Image (cartoon, rainbow, N blue to C red):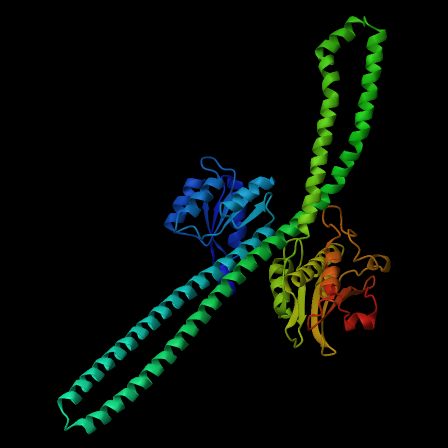
Length: 522
């Protein structure tokens, strides 16, 4: 895909909040896109009818017709139904998201908006939009070619019909003139031979044209299937990561609330029992206590408090069930192993993270060094391996940003933070990828636990401790490879990924040579 097609794409932002509209407009314009704006659904529909954009960022809650109704009207029109719509909303209910997707939306972005997430999803869906346009053009070209070949077949059939007419004419002449029998017979045999040759050529050409048309149809179907797989894979990958992070972050506070509700119920029951005893042995309390009891409706409070705590327990149980469902859902990962260009996966991941390498007001930028070797195509799960690259590169960037905050501008100028990526073929059977940084390094006690689930050194709210654990499982369990970390305090960190060029399917019990040589990996 040509990057310029993505950067020059036209995006329509629909939001009734002028502040959100202005911030998102400035960000997308600075990112290289052409941006249109609308503050309600009616204005958005009018603009789309006049000048269709390549992508629509649509707010759900708006005055007049809301985002759902606006999307439904756009999808009902032939001229606008293929324009991808991404909802922007603070709604978190699954029913609302399913409703939006059923109306034809391609994705959801949850408010408050994160610029990197918006940019990543906009680029992905603009790429898919361009791929769809290319498929449509190829389909039109295919139909034109089939039409031309159909015309050729009709012309050949017409020629055959004319030859048959000429044969009949020659046959009649033979019956009318016995004197020219020999000459006419020779001429007729010659024409018959020409006819046979022509019919054979016609049949051969027809068979070739039909085979070519069949191959073109198969190619078009494969392109459509590939597009569907890309859309599904991207949605499931993004949604899976989002769900896993949300479920993990919510689980601890919910468990705290759930565990303390039992104690709160016992404490309140003890207080109510004590109050009951007090009312039993003091039937005539002082006027001040009596007035206060009437003011707070004591009888209703005694009756309703246990019900309130019971409702809270039911609610917490429901939240725990939802979190468990989210965790199970986040583990869905259906992909196929196929030959892949590892460098293409690295470059696509770097493209997504490109903005984090740039200079900014708060960070001087990170230098990227690529030392790619001559690699063959590698049989692997491409989407999962790209997730490994994303985790390692994002962690390296986070480490360098935190490290630079502790260094002076002079230190940063003379020793700029750097990420180096190296690839090479090892023993003619394995591909090795090295991803290193010039950060502060990792202590031995931390390095030994890097791949443990839920272990993280990041501040609360910035990491779940799942990224490296998942990456390790993908490399070792899914690909039969090896993943290690080489680091020491003050010497940066470098991760090594080593996978076989040919698939060995370790999940089916295959014993890889690499594991036999090196033991049980890290």
